[in-house]
Amino acid sequence: MKKEKGERPNSRIIEKTLNSLSPKSNATLTGYLVLLVLYIATTIIVTTTARATSEINIGSNSLSVNTFAGVFSALSNICIIFMVVYYGKRGFHTAIIALLIQIPMILIGVIRRNNLSSLPGLFTDIFTLIAVIALYVNNDKMDKYQEKLRDQATTDILTGLPNRFACSALISDLIKHGEKFTVVSIDVNNFKSINDTMGFNAGNKVLKEIASRWKEIADRGLSGTLDFITRVAGDEFALIIRNYDSVDKVRKTVMQYDTVLTKVMTIDDCDLYITASFGYASYPEDGNTIDILFKSSDAAMSEVKRQNSSNHIMRFSSDLIKVGRSLEIEQKLRKALEDDTVYFHLQPQFDLSHKLRGFEALARMKDSDGKNISPGEFIPIAEKVGLVDKVDGAVFRKSAQFFGQLLRKANSDITLSVNISVRHLMKNDFLDEVRDIIRKSGVPASQLEIEITESIMIDSAEKALECIKEIKHMGIKIAIDDFGTGYSSLSYLNNFPANLLKIDKSFIDKMNASDSSKQYVAAIISIGHIMNFDVISEGVEDQEQLETLRSIGCDFIQGYIWGRPMPPEEAEAVMLEYA
Ligand code: C2E
Ligand code: MG
Ligand code: MG
Image (cartoon, rainbow, N blue to C red; front, side, top):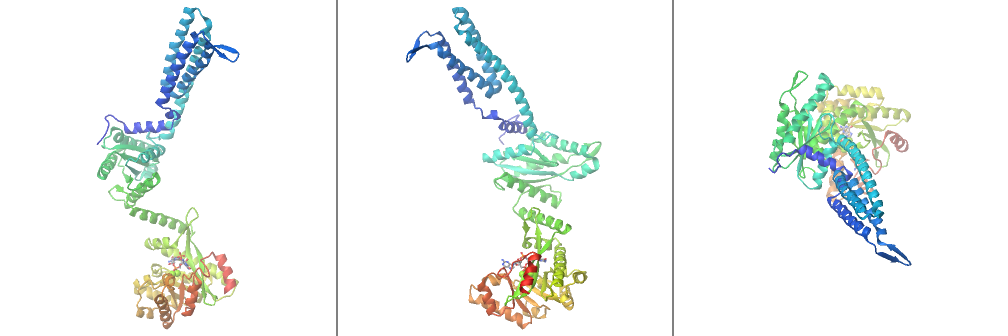
């Protein structure tokens, strides 16, 4: 592995980062040399013209050549001052040497030739010397102050490690130069409990000890890779690994950081065994921007935490994005249920003469930034993590409450349909929940409908069927949702106590593309009618679909053509107009 001896990567990189923040970093060596040459040239010109006696004629005036000496003298002094301003110590030393050579030379000239005409030049140089010293002293003070500020901006005060800013600066630099590297997100496990049980001071000591163990590996190059360890926040650290030839080497380096941590740590006479979770992502394979790389390494680290296994290290893989998004939605959903902010929209259903049949209540949930999260995304997650009954329940309760008020305002026989997952349906207290909602909302059972998805329904046990029969017995209608997406056999369907078949949108979408697709929908409608079900088509969007459905005898439609899902206030207006 390429590695310079005695190199201290952390300090070298911090230095580089600090320097990149300084305006002086823009001053190049070429500029310095140009100033030096200009200074020497103007000094030579001043010396030779000062001795010249010839004259230059401009119009009727004749000027002595040494009149121009003042101009060149000013120019040479400006060079000196620029050197001090832009080249710090080096510029200052050059200026002092130049002036200390020049001043005695002029003095000797004045004494030797007994010619006082060079005296003004001598005074100019002495004043320049004073100005240069004052400038340097002042600059030095400013530099120290600036350095302190820069140090504070890039260093974490508690541990002395570089901070998030320095870490991002290095990553940007590496990306700019196309150098491969790996970002490791590290989170100390159970750090909060150390803080809670041992106090804040002990927590700080733990962080300092962790930092010093890791700094030792990074600074002494013990891992064999070029490492840069930073503290990004609280108990979160980030490690940047460079100069490796295989992914295996990266893992070995991370393992070394893991191993030094597991050695007992004695803090305030207590023996602590600290562990951390490590997730890493490599540039360019796992991401090509700072943001993506950190998100990826964080996702891997969160997965390590979630799995809570003895293996503390994981590399990012694209599967984690899905896991990460699901976890994020699960958390948002839990919060929304806790705060009771899951709400509903109502989508109208009509018969073919545009008379309102009723509304379907659809669950809605907002992100913390106000954006909607689609039920297509959060309902499957709710089903997976066992929260769907709570979502169904909230939508059922809230929409029934609203619907009850609506019915009390305007006497109407329209229906409220709610989606209930089979998991929810099979819960022992489901029927009690339904009775409770009916009692509190005042909606008659005959004006309620429960939608059960066909594909889920046919996989379910006898118990679900028993429950559905019970619901039907209470006078509530049953709809088979998304019909056509499952594989219910005709005999199964014949025994199913439904009132309504909802033809899935996918069939309506392609219905007018070919005659056979249209015949297929027509056949579903006929079968539904033979079994005594009403039939509704979902997702009707255009006039052509509407006309086809009318011609093949569909009973109801639901779709954007006559009404999108809408907030309850708008639904009230629709009811007054179309019921
Ligand atoms: P679904 O029960 O089949 O509801 C119909 C879906 O089709 C709704 O999507 C509705 O907005 C959409 N839709 C209706 N007409 C049109 C149309 O003309 N064009 C298009 N492109 N789409 C149309 P949404 O609201 O996104 O709901 C998606 C699914 O989430 C629902 O499908 C249902 O399966 C589930 N869901 C919604 N709310 C609940 C709930 O409270 N509980 C349960 N268990 N599932 C729910
Ligand atoms: Mg539905
Ligand atoms: Mg549907």
